[in-house]
Image 1 (cartoon, rainbow, N blue to C red):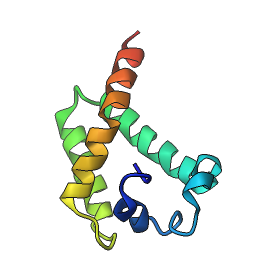
Image 2: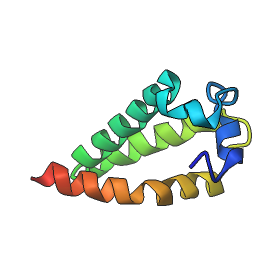
Image 3: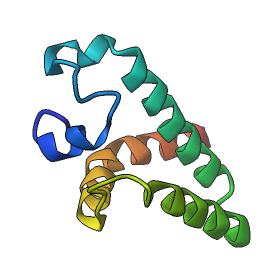
Image 4: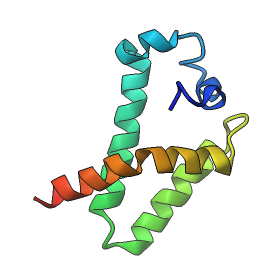
Length: 95
């Protein structure tokens, strides 16, 4: 996503100064990816508990309001780019 959307990469203070060629070995990117995947795991695990899921999503959304230049467009671009991985994860988790 950072290769095609420089505006998204610019939002991440910890990645701004990292050369795109070095992102594959970036510990900061790995840490963020783990946070995202853990949040997805928690959401998927709790899909049968709508109250928990709504509260979790609202809390996550509110925490992202503090980021300068964060927009719904960037959020949906991220979701669309992650959707194949989310589908794979859901299928794999169901096995």
